[in-house]
Image (cartoon, rainbow, N blue to C red; front, side, top):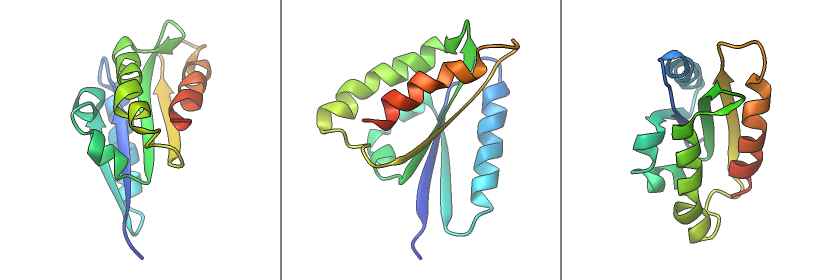
Length: 121
């Protein structure tokens, strides 16, 4: 079986989301034939082709004020030309998301719209 490439793309404001992303990478790497790569949203915007080559992309962002961080939102908006403008090159990829928050509410609400937007492109 060929290896499956999985990207874990995240923004971390205070390091918590980065710890989750690293744990996801370690878990994914423990599965035979899975090759995970970790990149921040800033790095991802310089590596669109690497993301195109992945079979799956896992997105992570902290929840601030009931939504994803501004940095993650900027990455999301950058996909309009880099991904959608090239003919929806992420269409058909497996996608997942994770988040964390210091507050009791808003965590699950934050990524629902992101999952719908990014998984359709």
